[in-house]
Amino acid sequence: MLKKILMLSALLSLAGCQSTNNTTKNTQNIYGVIFAIKIDKSGKLSNLRFSKATDPIKNTDVDFQPPSSYIKNVETKLAKRQFEIPKTDADLQKESYIPCFYVKSNPSDIRCYGD
Image 1 (tube, rainbow, N blue to C red):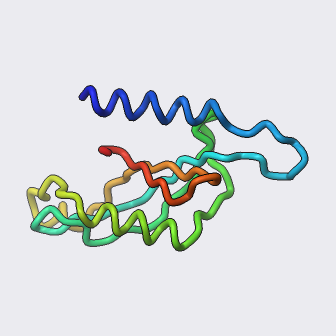
Image 2: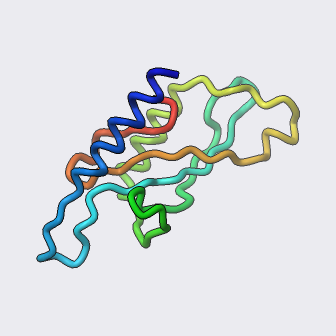
């Protein structure tokens, strides 16, 4: 629990460091990126798809598509996790959602819920 609180604090601190340079059209540096996932019978990731992006400061949806390399890196990272095993076969068909952060200035630093 403490680890999650510290992670959230760090992410909020990063959000406060957002660039204020108004010389470019899109000055947003941090995005909340929501992925829809499915879990298999062994508790491993079986499917991942990009769902939407948000502005974590304003808590609004934004028109942003993360690079395919970022999505692939998220999938690689989440594939190493052990998720809660679905209780029924019907649960195998249900999608869950997991939020991650995309930091334009450091796209290789992938932070998702549960890290």
